[in-house]
Length: 191
Image (tube, rainbow, N blue to C red; front, side, top):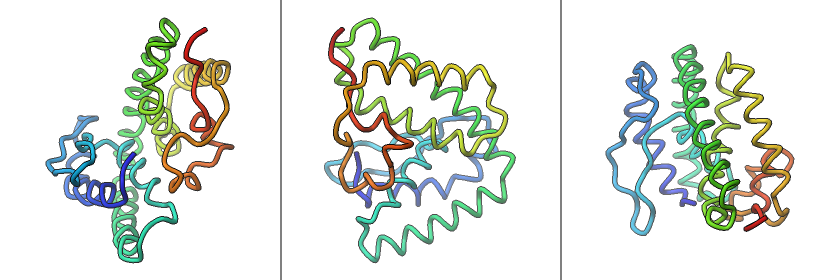
């Protein structure tokens, strides 16, 4: 996935634009920063990407300096969440809808061609994690969207081969199996 340095830099850059982002109609907001050497380019700023980076940084694998930096950034994020509570919740609901559609599209691709799409699972499942994080932040998610997510979860449960945590071991404690069961195994490669 990513290093603590990567996530800290993303949170810091996201905070610079957070107010403008929350008050805009955009779901995906450009962040102009360079990723650390050897790491993937940064995603666009969304509440989901911000919450995922924030969650990964809650692991116990941070240095004391990183922990201090994270605590400061975390406090600023929480202050923005409180200050712009309605905008935050509305943005989370809008992103939930968008991420749900992307997750559904991946599941449909997998249903049509399991062998051709199983290798995408480790990346695509980050959308499911973001849905979990966004659902806690959003008010008024339509029942139809929650039903769709439940149906997609049922399908993944039916094809998931239970196994080890699929992301880095250092962040496993942040994503317990009881809640993030879809991170503990991979779908079968073919029917």
